[in-house]
Image (cartoon, rainbow, N blue to C red; front, side, top):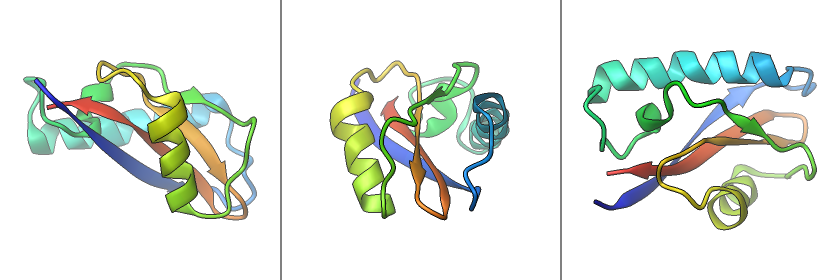
Length: 102
């Protein structure tokens, strides 16, 4: 059993979404991924995060997706069993990512 890092992007130019709104949007995306890649676990996708509350970290804002993904990968998401983490991109939205059981 390994793990793959995956992330998605949610548009929210003014960064006004609440933590609950971010989580709801992500859960819909995770459900779509589960339908596409399977519900059995170990898909290596964010489908593994379905049902786990997304942890929103607003303590630092990033200028680009690469920086945001790197921060999640190296500093926040250390457990392949979840949860996913969300960090803001200036004037763009949210990067949501995590290590996913594969």
